[in-house]
Length: 391
Image (tube, one colour):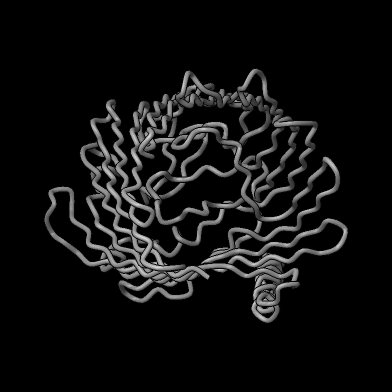
């Protein structure tokens, strides 16, 4: 416990010092230090599953991304966010502080610093790593994002950093504590080794990925240890005619059998994407989630990332996403998801507007319907309006 507190203090101090140094020197053209980020305000209105009982929500986010280039090919990065929420329903959610403070990494870098009635203040560091590059090699140690996924919605190949499709306000996506070694052997060809430890050894992940390009297709194969399960996977990205064709699948198998629980399962997703001449971008994706129902995952919020071996709240899912630029400053989107085996659906329309340089506005709606007995039934519907200033 004491060692964990010391580690938290050291990492938090390192992050703060890097940010302060970046603020002091980041404006110099010749400075190796860079500080970027944004401030976002996002009020919202939420309705229950019957589109009644409206309640007001509010979110404030400040994100800081700091980095420094050092000699000998070294780079240090520290990135995190401070968030302030207001939601009257927080009063009725037991353990909301513990849910937000959950950190699956080896080091706990997530803290709730305010919990008063409907107000929650939360900070977390999702990137804090040392990176070295030399020739064909790259080594990165610390909290980082390891993105092995290929698809745009569901990523069964993403053993280290799966995310929630419904958490639209977290475009950076989570990081993980890991050691990652990459060797680039040629165009689009590489070998990766990654290890993410956990406080409980059985929950650790270690895997190898080999990627190459063959006849216009990016191909990858992976194998490893995933939370006391073996994992074998493959993925591809190419085209059929003028349409993009992507897919990935992973087979998981328990190293120890458990009574009443299927020992192995497959999670697979594939999709097509197409860009029309007017700039409309369409994605259709289909998911088979063979890990659904194996055991209770203890998920309380629909925006919580799920495991790679049980990636959705249903066994099947079909998603259609459309993005269209109305002008250089105004764009719109619509995402539709159907979960037929649990009788649920999801609709997310959006409208984005570049108000001026570094200032963006977005309106997003989320409608969850059906799914009796699931989180979909309780999620209700919401409308968000965000205003973000980036620096």
